[in-house]
Length: 337
Image (cartoon, rainbow, N blue to C red; front, top):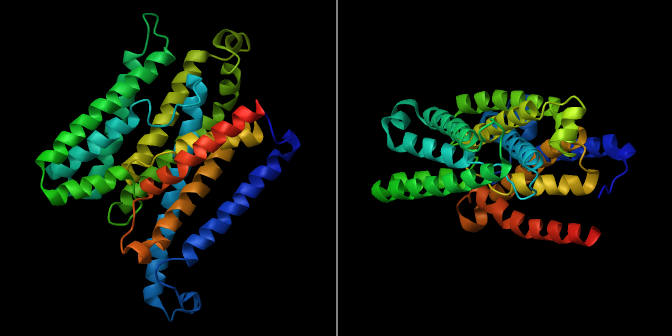
């Protein structure tokens, strides 16, 4: 059900943009330590300037990029699979990326290339997983069977989890802790690599552009593949494009931040409840709301540091918030239907 008239769509996107900008300022201003912003701008607080430019600003940009990627990918997979429970990780990308990153941590790759090597291996692992899922889910005519995509993705993620648990059990405790922090999802500067973040931002921007260009095709697929073909839309080509763009978005996000759950599941539901299902609107709206959600969640983990004397992985907080919120959205949609 469309709760917001179409004429309000531009205003809604503008509102999300304003809220996101406000959240960016909050993320820069708030933290464990108070920064002297007057001294930053007049040059009398060089240490605070370093914290702002080399810690808080990159972290805010990363949170927005990862949130945007996961939310847009979740929306795309839910649309092309015609399944509202599909999230960015269900097609096996997360499992492949997690295995790739884990192997990089326990092999000399991490020692030689640092976090850049971990991110690169995670990205390649995610792409390899989606290629495998794609090939195993096609029928004899080469058409994708969406039901098989879900089955193959779930099975592969389960298999990948078993591989990771085995690897964690045979490595030293310090390495196992490092693997655990990465797998739970974190935006900490101890985990990310500046080069990897820059590459990830570029890949995410390209994939988001591809996805937006396929918005009309996704709208057509919603009425069925045969009807979409009668409108001049190639269902197979559109599906492949959506899978490619969504996989790039998820692989780039996981490679630099680990597995952050629920963003790609609840954000598309919230957006569709507010503005309907026109993908020309829902794709940019999901991108903005995903960035806003993860940015605020990361800010909350940093502000809770004085309470717990440690920084909780942001993936844990998104799960704690996302679970009850998803149930609320589900119940609300049932009441409106």
